[in-house]
Length: 430
Image (cartoon, rainbow, N blue to C red; front, side, top):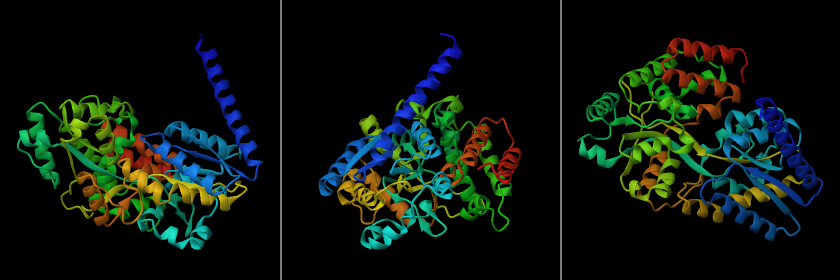
């Protein structure tokens, strides 16, 4: 079939699917007893857990009917964007917080949840204080932390470290030595699947933090106190990344490997790579996917760098991972908030713990030793930096990821990368 016809058919199918979705949304919106809920929870037992919460809500509030939709990440982003663009959003929806949510807030399409939280103080006080900044704009809260505490750590194969007599590095010099040892024995130091771009971005975020502390990014992102993405700290972070590439720190072909199909994990499982910098969700994925390898798995925090101003206890990640919000077009916001309360109540949080997650609430008890250490790492962290591509406005976040991937590919200099980023920020690419 000619490409042109295929494209037209694909576009038509997408348009029909979107029209059908909006029609369903309108039908439900016209009923005062109906709530449309969308989310991007498709992994593990979470879709089942959410449906159980919906069933509890419907039982407690007779007459209400919830229409839930669980969609994969990228497709979900597109679906949500189309729905808001057409002024037909779901009543309840989840996001990653940060810049993406703020775009909808700025356009007046998201309800302020602060009054509901003030009326339900015991419910609000259950959540970790560090979970709120990602959903707070001008002192008002627009989302409820839902899913998981996820931070980036360096996972490693304990057997390989023991075999080659190396210890988890705490400093940059120690890390370079570990890289040298593994290269000498034909083992790739790091598994990296950077086709997805955000995977390599984790190195950049940590290096900026370790070199300059959290204030450097925050000032640049908010354009305050002389902040700029052309700050020398961003240049130095790019240099460190390219030094790693030149030192052979990554398995060959890393910029073309796809994380979503498990490319980096396969390198770990086969023993062809020793480490992976990844979010802590990777531990639960490995536990389900390859239980025998999970017994070899451990982690260490990202190392400090020489002369760095950042605290080596700082972490990059999210305290919430997903946040539930209410659109301003929702007819019964009180009922929608009750649904969110049920989706994040104690029963729901216990179900998340059983699914190897650490929900963003106080006094969570986890039994797995590795996850206990993750929990301790988070509790001791002076600062949790939200992922750049979530903290920044969407288009600027994409620019950051593109430039990070180019740095890994050695196709751009660190200075040129920061110049492009700052130019994008100044031009309003957000």
